[in-house]
Image: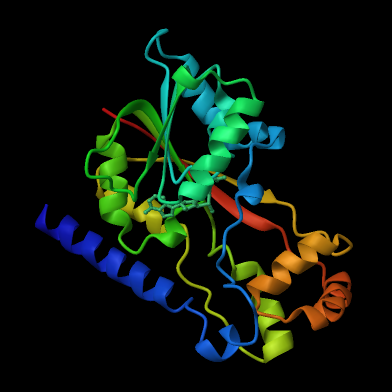
Length: 268
Ligand SMILES: C[S@@+](CC[C@H](N)C(=O)[O-])C[C@H]1O[C@@H](n2cnc3c(N)ncnc32)[C@H](O)[C@@H]1O
């Protein structure tokens, strides 16, 4: 037990150290009007294509296997509802937790557009772990952990808040890993490569769970779409006057697909 806690502590320390290396040096930030880490609610809105991912398929299976009245879903780091809202009405009730009130406002708007009744949705504007965490039969946390410096406490709270199953989705590498070649080409600056999703799998195992694991790819950015070029250029702190060059570079060096991993654990 003591060894496991020590191993968890080491994994978490390595995770936090590797995440800190992703901070962008001030000299690049001063050249652009917004933070390269700014998240837009429109990037995380519900999308039918996500229903085909292992994450949503697992969640739908786990929820529909439960008796009526118990098909409740907790979405931690919900953003604008891109993961959980598509699961209504299989999920009879959805609780969305996010530290950003803008994301939750967008989520409520997206829920209304999808016709989700207000009594089927609860939103909680809070950092996770929350002081008074809501609970549910099934929980999901998708595309959040690279924002979290203490993933062990985060995962423990998620597992404790859930009675049946938890699904954690995370890209294989940091969400900005795909723009590392732009940093090198436009700034001559080498960005980090660590941490990776493997550490999250190792943490779940040390916490006493043997996760099912699924791997898939999201298509790379489309170099002929100016919005996608702008999104990548902003992530690499490239000023707007050079976005034409960025598009030309991306047409030559097609952006690689993003590798994604999901872990599913059953609560015993
Ligand atoms: C990249 S978005 C992912 C949104 C959604 N899960 C999806 O996959 O479409 C990450 C979200 O997690 C939220 N977040 C990050 N760390 C959090 C924390 N410790 N507690 C609550 N929300 C958090 C952010 O505000 C953001 O809305």
